[in-house]
Length: 149
Image (tube, rainbow, N blue to C red; front, side, top):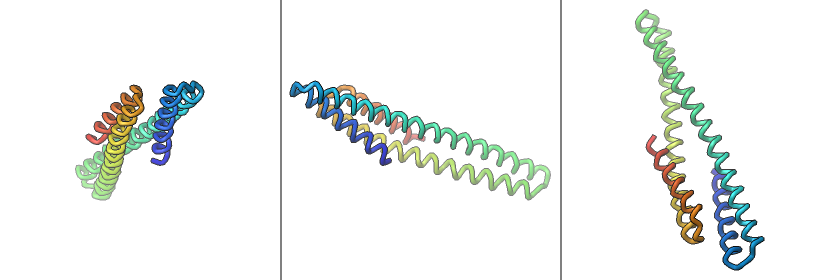
């Protein structure tokens, strides 16, 4: 979350520099602000992509372990192998619990994204920066979808 806060702050600072530079006629400040904003946006997109890849990996692992555990449990019960049935039940339960934790993390990130999106939209309004407003709306929508996991 610290990287997210840093990236978001740099986006806002860059947008402010860009607006101030454009308004007061200082193209170097405006260009520096645009660069800072763009770099922060790129860094955040990379961080978000890594987090999403990690989430998908965990979800796939949890789903696979849940299915395998359920199969072991069913086979054990069918064949009267109580050890295999218990092992399968434990594996399935563990995977399901881990997935519930992963879902809760996704929902928490969704709340964070919704708030971040609203703030970006306000900053976009204040700085008259249409791209920041659009980015804010996109981020807020992403958060809303994440919260519905």
